[in-house]
Length: 170
Ligand SMILES: [Cu+2]
Image (cartoon, rainbow, N blue to C red; front, side, top):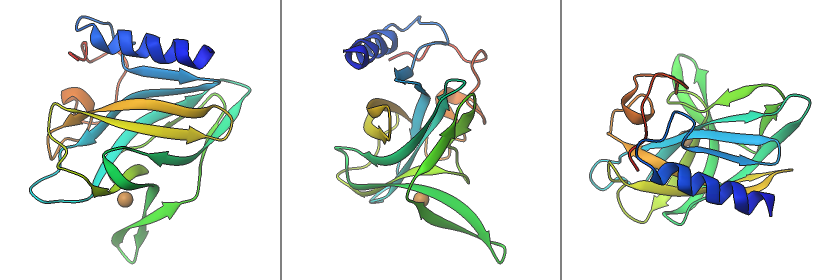
């Protein structure tokens, strides 16, 4: 019940172009997922990546345990590690979200990896992704698809800030 209201609120929030910076935030249980975005994929690429900011309320914690998307055959939680000076991706079985903290998934860091894309991710589209948390359960989000080389959501150049960008225009 609470979750469906939050989901509805999120839909309403992203559908109002002039919405304030609080738009594009999804809440479930103690977990908040903010500013999901993905990079457009070039040509015939069949893999892509999506990024979000996840936080858990003070005094709680949760764990991201899985992800899926109707746009991809398989979705994994990934991290990057340096191995002899070479960046490598490694699958994570889970990603802890400590209470009172915010975990940022971003290029060159933790990310949501999409395999077997059913089509290219096109700039300006929305990519539906379902995140599964141990306690909060499923959180359905829609990632804005940013240009191929984007470093952050909505035309920012890095961290998804909370004040500096305008409405999301969806
Ligand atoms: Cu990856």
